[in-house]
Image 1: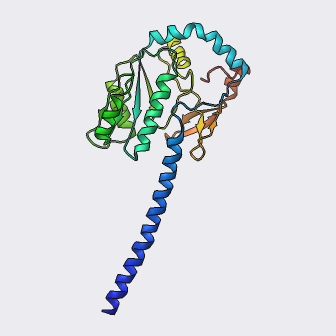
Image 2 (image 1 turned 45 degrees about the vertical axis):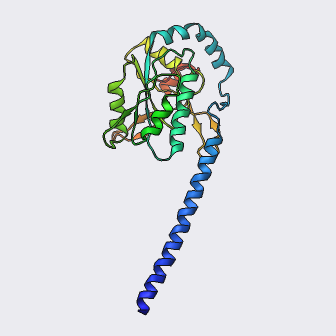
Image 3 (image 1 turned 30 degrees about the vertical axis):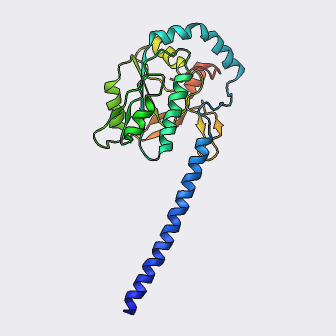
Length: 240
């Protein structure tokens, strides 16, 4: 009897400690959600472009709308049901992506989601651009989900974005301009950073590029000297 009571006491103490850790984790998660929900979906991004880049931007204005009309594009966006704030991030991407293009007539098709159920369906009905939800029959992972979304897309150009991305002003037109020059081109923008602690906006580096090593691991590499020479100091030109 004594050993039984000792075991029961030990179990109660263990549950108490575990319960405390769970509550602490829940409070931390609630704080993150609170901070995230305070962020406006139309958050003002810190201007990072230099004057030279702005002048180039002005010269491109004349051919931007023509580029947008030429390409109807589809976007494949992945969303899961970690917590509802993840869907808020998905909607943040949707608004930032659609509202920061010069032409709003593109066919918008955010792609795959799994296990968000009716709540997501009800929300997408309120969106201005047509949204198609594609459900995987089972949890299939990132790559299979993207391939599924790509197989169902109907646009001439497909963009792949994660749900935690946010698009800045004029994000799409330079990419489409490069594809217009050569339809075989696969383009990737410079990816800026939003701090996961403070939501501070920080400019990404244009002196590195993403690539794969022989083990097929993704790595960041410095821009080679041959590209530096080809660009002749003009860092607004793309890296090949």
